Image 1 (cartoon, rainbow, N blue to C red):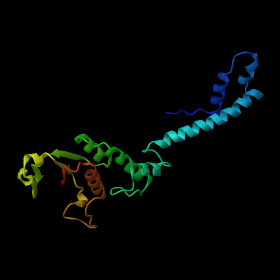
Image 2 (cartoon, rainbow, N blue to C red; image 1 turned 90 degrees about the vertical axis):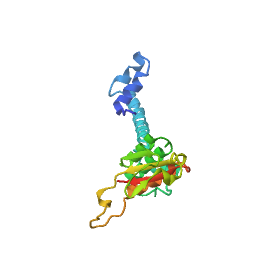
Image 3 (cartoon, rainbow, N blue to C red; image 1 turned 30 degrees about the horizontal axis):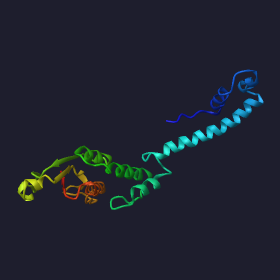
Image 4 (tube, rainbow, N blue to C red; image 1 turned 30 degrees about the vertical axis):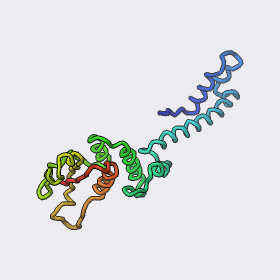
Length: 198
C-alpha cells in the first residue's frame, strides 16, 4: 500500500539525501531559499505519489471506477451472461465473477463462485437425488458411468418465487438465472448439469 506523505515530509526526505556540512545546512531552515527550492520539488513528488496511489486504487477490479471498461473488455464482457451495464458496483461484481469463473474445477470452486452472487449452494455428484416430483434415479441416466458425469446444484429459491405467488407476481430470479448461465459456461461439455431448487 502506498502511504501518502505531505509536502513537508517530502521536503524532509529530499533534504536527508543531501550531504551534511555547512553548505547544505539551509536545507533544514524553514524560510531559507534552498528549503523553498526543495519544497517546490517536494510538491511534484507529492503529486506523483498521489497519481501512484490513484493507480493502486484503480487497478484492482473490485475498487476501480476508471478502468472498469478495460476490465470488461479484457474478460469479454458483454457476453451471454453479462450485459456490461448497470451500476458501477454491479459491473465490478460481474468482473470479479468472470475472473473467478476462469478457474472453476472443484466443488469448492462452484460454491465460492455462487457465494460471489450471494447464493448458498450444495454441489452433489451423481444422480440419485431429488425431491418429488423431480427425482433423478440412477436408471434415468442409463448407467453408473454416465451418472459420474452429472452435477446437481441445489439452492434455495426465495419465498417470492414460490407458489402460491402473491401480487406482484415474480417468476424466477435474475440472480439465479445469472448463476445458471455462468455454471453452464464453466462446466465441461461432457457433464450434465442439473439445478435443484428447494
